Image 1 (spheres, helix red, strand yellow):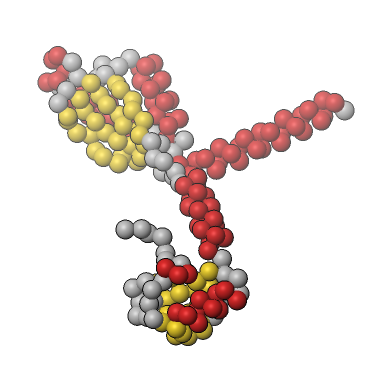
Image 2 (spheres, one colour):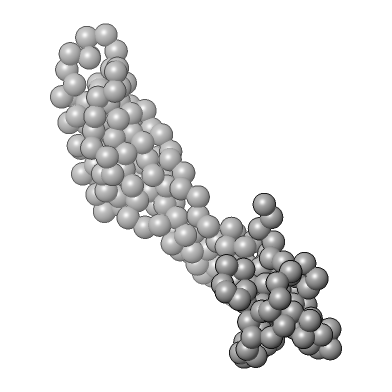
Length: 198
């Protein structure tokens, strides 16, 4: 079944409720009169509400309408932010320096507006001490609390313990902030160049 609306001669009903090109109500007219009006004004007769009784049709430039709706859909797709889940893997007995490095990655991902899945991998006897992993995840969540929140609490999954941290700001907001920071940086460097030339 096609999702395209029926236009002109494809509309096969005896009468339609006609809407003019500027949205004004013309009223219920026979299909022949509606087609004649469309031809005289050099527009298409487009069925906009097929389920209504009688069906509602509008006089419009169908090619232009299709083009504009395709552009709107394209613009909506471009502005749509894709949520990406980044993953960081830790061990229960992580070195303090390594922990700081991993925490830095989590901070960077959250600032960019991405979710972070933190996985703690247990090996051998470490599996009998899940509280070590739980404490490490709690510590990490507290360290990044100003950038993100715990979206799913730590839970054991076989040999791993998993927690998901979501960012406070949306991906689109993070992108806008990054673009604004880049613009001010470019302005500053341009001003520095002008000052150096003088």
